Image (tube, rainbow, N blue to C red):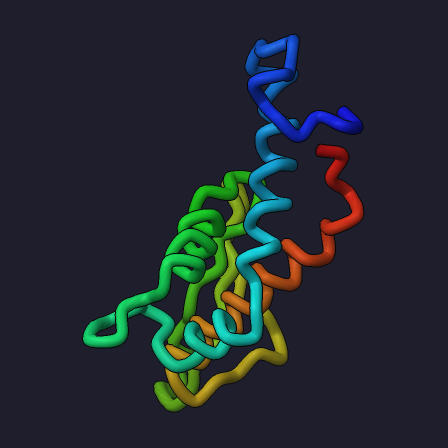
Length: 131
């Protein structure tokens, strides 16, 4: 829907027609929250534990990533050697698997790598939004 930037002006509000517009608007807004400062903040404190709780932009960006149903579920995985972490991928209806070539010294490093993957997915879609 080229030119639709205000949902109130969108005439056809049936769910199957409006959801793509809503998601495009939301992706567009989320991209604006991605800054080097937000990425560094996540690297320092992936879970947002106090006293340095997550900032508003990072909090909303993480909330957005958690609500993406079409994405595979990525999670830290403790390797059998118990000395490193990797990334496990789970998709509905399929057996989970561990990504090859991803090894991290700490669980927080694995979490941050997952965050960077999600950011890369979001920024790669930049030209695909029509809203």
